[in-house]
Image (cartoon, rainbow, N blue to C red; front, side):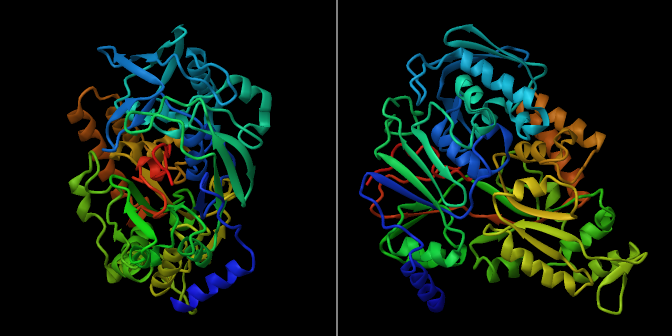
Length: 523
């Protein structure tokens, strides 16, 4: 640890960082950059984090991680059949450009989301939209083709931020790259890929959600978000006070941060995030459930947690956290680590041990191509799992990708396994996101197309009561887990590390976007 710290100080001395600016600049550090800032066209968290700062949603998510509260919509009603939501909008909102916010902006936003089709992988979060129509300057009717039990919850997500049509059409293909307009507390200034994003205060902002004490404007002139991929450099930068905030502090040094007087470490309560490795089931090497199960039970999650994460996570044996809404208790016993059973499953599947210690079948080595993003939670666990599986005759071929190209590469087909840490709000959120056949090729990268799965997901989405919703979502969890479509590895604890000069820093939990609006933050 001392060696790593000295290395970090040395790298700082070589000029990798700029000195902290004056008290009117909010300095943020991240490990991963975004591929772009068009929130409708991505599943990538770094895009969503900035989108939620620059743009607003109709409703916000309260601190309990369950309750939607008014935001751009000050109130709403729902028809008895659950198909029509009527939103009453605020009449005092402006975009950063100065344009007044009206119901026409809401209608355009969801029309564009629908028209993007497969290029909007999270479009399902808006529900099965039939039409979103203005019925007055500050009233919209949001009509669905069928009920969507989690619509209000999902409308808090970055996919559903409200857009300025003029801005989108003016920038065309450069929207989300050279600029983006929004009604959020921060305004976009510039983006230098892999380096930094700069935002400025939206001076007119007064409509922050009631969960914040300060409705706006924010208490800084600007925000500078620096991308620092190297763990040693991120450690040194926070210890030396160069940054105010990060939620990408090296996990193995969280205990050190807690013991550092100048730093404050807070856990984002109610923030669910699963580190998993998924199987592309249409690829020959991983098409057999026995092979997938063997990989899942042939590793030691407790050792990965203690050795790689220094016990700053929890071993995961289910896809959904046991404390999350609509968790299925019956899934708790499906994944049972057992190296000897893993070997038997591989034998039964016809993969025999070769002379080099790697299993083969029909002249094909059991050497799946594994994609992960450099600098995120998957990298070190991937190396650990590679070691475990070599002992049972599987040769994981690890392919680390830069965060700016990971979404593109993981949307392709030429690999067997990939890994991300996926945040989610409920069992239904996670199941709908990944396992609905409509979401092939991404985020349903498993290419999982199963009528029963789709039927159960539809039953959960269309439920008009919590009991019916839970029954369907519990059933789909059991189904997909018994197919071993993923290797659940760790339930990731989300930490926010701040310099103590930063005040009022309660972390939010929405999809790991702990910063959310940053309305109360101050020096």
